[in-house]
Length: 171
Image (tube, rainbow, N blue to C red; front, side, top):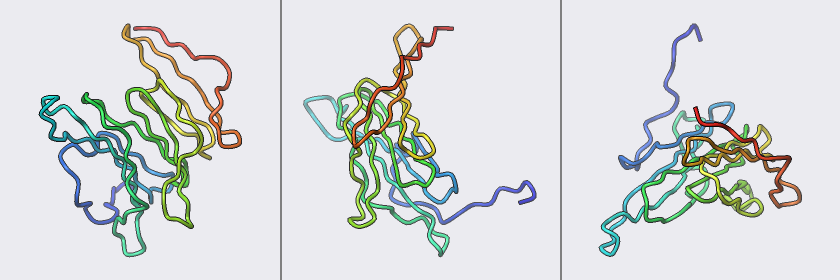
């Protein structure tokens, strides 16, 4: 209040230097998704074997950040790509993208786990969820600096393409 920023919660521990390439907050600021990337030892691939994960936290009543479900393992690839993620407004729906695919997960209160919502959407590198988490925009860059955005809707547990490609142009 009064134009002064206030730190919420305590410092999050257990993250490496490759954390925070992608962060997302729920609308009320009480759920936080953090994309992480780290190299794994792999002598066959000169150490370029990367693991991508997203961890979600919530701000507890005691003003500390607590883990919200298990971390989501996204991909193990032989490149240095990062994770793109998006939270629905209430923080119960999470979408993730790496170089070639996007997936959405819904938090199951009974099992306290993130469960995949529908099929994987291929081709995207960036993702944004709607307020409800039932629609997803997927960004697909091209080498000529143009790109495409595709919109999907979750209908009966399956992501369906809506409309036409939204095609951008290079600057």
